[in-house]
Length: 306
Ligand code: RRO
View 1 (cartoon, protein in one colour):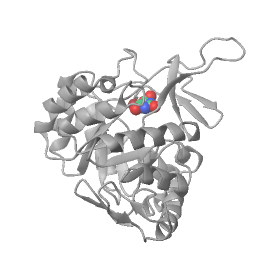
View 2 (cartoon, rainbow, N blue to C red):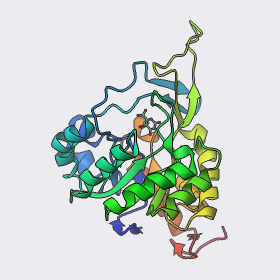
View 3 (cartoon, rainbow, N blue to C red):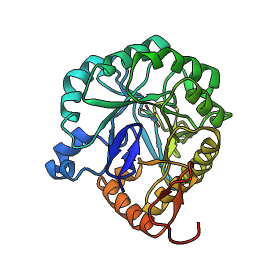
């Protein structure tokens, strides 16, 4: 099931969604075994910002039928803390490292891109232009023009693959994907979470400390499928598809819709080894299905009609 993605040779098409699997905490909790049999073919780290952040006030999670609403708010050690503490640990993982970064201005994104560009431990960068949980409520990636300008600014700063993580909370997601591609993105990933809200049933007030949050899990799977399909019609660059993947069959659906890689997110909260199972299930399905990628190449064995 080896896949080539932006010049990286990956063992299979299943990776994690940023912020949904903490490889450092997983090693502490489950020991080296989970890391040795690492669930994903590449590891995408939680979003890093220039300055350290505490994240949003609690409560930060609410369970809904078929998923979760999170309002985590990007807690992280900041660039200097990440380089000193996290990068050396993550560099020991047996798979390529993709660092997810987010800035509150073009200059901040440029600073992050420059800093990680110099680090050989980092195989690729994912630009998060889609976090739903920042106080400004601003989502850079909701507008094609803004996304294109950001990419045009940072593209020349690195030779590493740049993946743009798209928001589903935009009027025209394929237009944003096209703007990213035109300005030099190597790949796009989608979907991030959908803005949602829950009320405390006892008080009628917002449950989440951040008032609103991002909905993920199986509830969003059909939305992810539709958006991946729409983006696949709009761009030539590879797509990382994610949103509610729980089984190999869900991963296969996203690949049929046009994804080259599939991200697992919320399911890893239920089962930290979900990635291993989903990759195994996908392998079995691919052995019996013909999946044509957008260039007409077949993944897996031609078997039955799609
Ligand atoms: O940290 C978060 O609250 C968060 C981020 Br950065 C993101 O990209 N998506 C999300 O659902 N939550």
